Length: 104
Image (cartoon, rainbow, N blue to C red; front, side, top):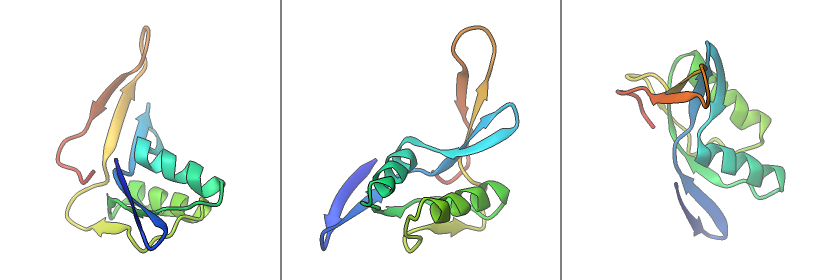
């Protein structure tokens, strides 16, 4: 995640993806989580992630709106699906696998 300021506004380049827990997809990614926290404190940065055009991307767009994050830096990739990390629950800590071929 990289952050800079432009004209007093924080600029945040980083992933926005879905965390997949046994089929339940939750918008996430560390940079996106930081941006949502900043927005909750009234300091919403301009985020510049890329998401796919399917249902997971739509979840992220909806989360942008719910979190009152500006959408002017959000890019929609019509050729690739949204970034996804699959967590498998078993014994101990969940295993995370980043799915290849996706915009992050």
